[in-house]
Image 1: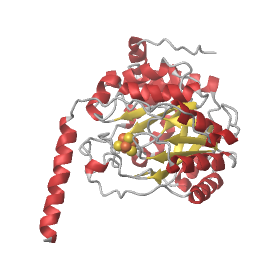
Image 2 (image 1 turned 90 degrees about the horizontal axis):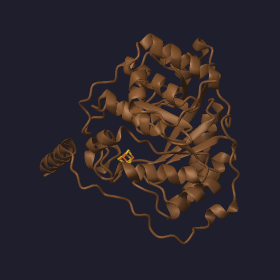
Image 3 (image 1 turned 120 degrees about the vertical axis):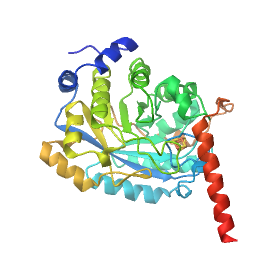
Length: 370
Ligand code: SF4
């Protein structure tokens, strides 16, 4: 069996990334078969439990309050709605549900208590529950685990260097700290990033370098192609070429052989053949449902049609780890000091431009209304 390494160098990863594509795909497909059943793909359903109005400035995100993308801010969904959506997703073949809230960080409040109840309920439906709620303290990670959380998503987005070009309101170290909190509680980590934001190949490799040097490797590595949304600073970015997506997935597969490499955002613009190449290159999971938080995604039926063509079937839940047990103690908050998150002082020109553009648009609208 191919060795699982945690001491990759950037040079080694770059060499893999730059192999001739046909060789790279073959190597990745070979390793994929050692660790995974290539005829199984995990189907995850992403539910946006609290949409929009986020205080952060992630340059790709339509949910950031400052970008005027027309996304309305919603309150937290009810536990019953989440249960119903999870049940529908299960019927459609999903074995995992990811609950996403547009928060900078989790607060110990009623909303978080409700999220914990959602985790408990979905876990009791024998589905893997993943949450993506922003930054997390150690005690919050403990409570999520005790509620029955299987995985926590916290993407690195890109390399440490390029991260500063995209987000100014928090630092890379904060991301790593949250990942560490989840790992310490025995929660599977889901962490990956986005390509097509204007980064170069060293940034792509830099991100895989950080992820592949974690012990253990993240259980899940989402690779997203940027969906440029009008109103965000990255609205003018060109769609990612399928070849870049395949290359990135194959490299992730080789350096983190056991991980579920997740073909994530950007599938809406991929052909069936392109997606098939991604599965050949080691993608073992997709997000399903007609929306990924706020951006379009293929419908379940289209995915099932593609699975049929490829002879692939949806993976069962808990093939890579045991189902967590829900413990009553998830309701108890430990006495702990407030987590100190960093707030980097750097500005990003295109973020400032986008904010100004939004302000001008609002001024014009006010004038028109007068
Ligand atoms: S990616 Fe998350 S943290 Fe960043 S603006 Fe969007 S919702 Fe907020």
